[in-house]
Image 1 (cartoon, rainbow, N blue to C red):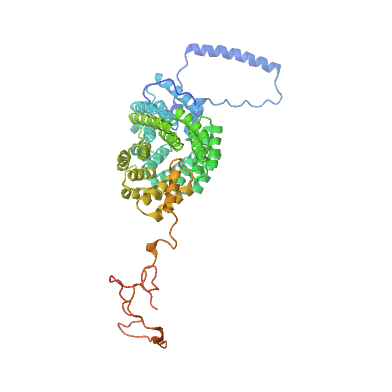
Image 2: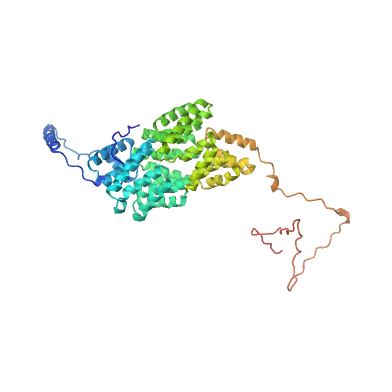
Length: 550
């Protein structure tokens, strides 16, 4: 992984503007530097002239344009809405740090620096950079308030809030910018993240469509694929993600697109395909550690646990995201390596504490950990707080449901588990959780269906939970022949009077009914009352419940 930026500037601030720092003139060149460059230019010119005299090709081609440097590449990626490579991002941070030291009133440069810090913190899992980002963005706003045209700093604060999982604040910043500058495409990724985090999927879809209208290309395709995935449209998500990969302009962007394809394959229960996509992403950008984590997940699903453990150890050392530490701990536990699992869970607790002190909300991962490996009631409290704060995504609903179930409150849990499944997201763990909750409530039929759905969607969705899903399904057994007993018609009650003998019956000649006229005329007998006072429905009743005349 590339080295982290070493130089620590004054407080960081704000998002990458459409023009931003690139519109700021460079600092004046010192006289000594000017003279040195002139002398070097004269010497270089003499060498070039001498070479030209020696050999001048007949079909000399035009000189190729100079290769863009890392700072220019990072700025170009930001202007396109694509991720920059980590090395280019490092160069951009160093460049802006140096610049603002001598130009502290340059609001756009502070905004660029702040946004670059947000991106570095997000992609390196170093939450300390979020504090620097906030400082830089505030410096940008101090130099030029948002009301006076510094929307870049506001967008940066929105991106920072989203990176900290504070989706309410991200929504507020994003909607503020959109109200003032509805055609500013940089704000829509912030809004999409905020709406998805809050479970406002319809609003996220509208923001995605607007972003695609304003900014064509791979970034818009990637967001559209995410929208389709959240709506449960798997084929559309796959096709759009593939197009994003095909049209990605840089290795970093292509690696991100291939990573997305790997995730979609994993959700379909195709770990071999997922592994191939993650490997392709790593060949494209060896520093894309999120794909190494995906690779470890796919290897575990394929039963190649030694390789999975090796990849997980590398990822958690270089990209210590809480969810990766939890996955590694559960893989250890599934292999009965309880000591290693406990060590990993202790490291996870420390990481969660550091995140909390940096203002990052990791309550979702913390609740998942507490529900299965710690205190379920603490998990319930965490998810109740998130739910009350309007974080009502499918992931939060599912985790709240599972926390309630693990705390022994399955009747309360089922409504949240159903909500998670009904969002459209095809996540095997959602179906598994709902199935186990229904089983605890004695709802064997629905439980069987949801556990089968979980294993059909992704047989290896979790090294710990997938075997439990199979055990739960076996415990339910096969459904009774003929369907559930309560769906069979009740047996007729024995009559108090003996039925007449067959030979005593006399067949009456069939007569066609005569039509009656006048008020109150009847065309058939009134239905006999049933026990309980209700009338038996006519065999010819329509779907709406009305009876039809013969």
